[in-house]
Length: 450
Ligand SMILES: *Cc1c(COP(=O)(O)O)cnc(C)c1O
Image (tube, rainbow, N blue to C red; front, side, top):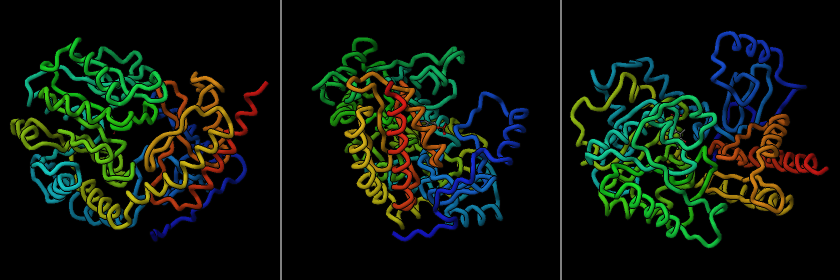
């Protein structure tokens, strides 16, 4: 693969940060931006490209988060930039529900082609992952005439009212923001590291199915929504057989199976979609994050008979499927194909996973190493136990940042470090970032011993 980058692909921290320009912006921000919106990194971005983010004071950070799995093709991919510029010189908006345009149709055609299953599909485009999830539930309820929605432990589906109800974690997402939307039922997930030993994926699915049948009855359920690999909840990869068993049960009971691939989609896991890895064909899929090279775009794609059951005007929105975002999506998908970014994601797993496993063996504070493609995680525990250790997780992420590497945490217990770099990051830069992570774990562990 030859992807040339505009910015030097290097970690370069000059003195201590935040520097003066970032400090001044923090001061302005404090007086203008809601305290409810927080930022992980105390510096302000001036530029970003490939695997680096450069701040307003000239520091260059290795970015292992890609804005939460968004800038998979890079944060300033030239092909995406050209498509955005071209479209914006013609029209930035007409509203697809007023005057339609080709870009929207083209994105819908691409989604039908790329998503699993060769049945007839239809799409509707939105602005955010949460909005896509809301609309997938609307479609499922309308098409089935049922109300109940099943979600899972550790799930994350967004921050709007319905998606807060679907999201599992109280703090910071739900606490004091209720009342929440009704008819949402939470079922046990397959979490191999924390499930009882020997519980297979099929067993875990049957545990959930039994609970659904006892508490609700399959014929009352409109939709079952699940992330094939849970994102925010801790990069939890369910045991093999879990998703296919749930999918088969949903089909047998007329329940719409919704795969929320907002985080896992678009080459992230080494396939176009994580559902491909599991051999499942969802009835509906929700997509966003990696879809458009950083522009806000989201989609619901799925079975024509479900998506076309909705009355005209039942789906839409002012900005949904914005023409500039659609142009960016078409260009991003072309970049994924041209550079085989799914192959890149598998390559990233191949070079990073052994390092993470070795780190776990060498330190004793990592209970589980998991993930797929360029969606990899380590779960921190107190040595010799499965007890979550959020403190060391925070210390490691902070130490890595101090050394110039942006690393995200996640997990119901706040004890997971997740790696989701841009798929166009150079190997050398990626491995330098992993080296910093390794040093940070070793250093934090020393801090742990009395
Ligand atoms: C991020 C995310 C969402 C919400 O997407 P937004 O664009 O932030 O609204 C929904 N589902 C999953 C799996 C996500 O990772």
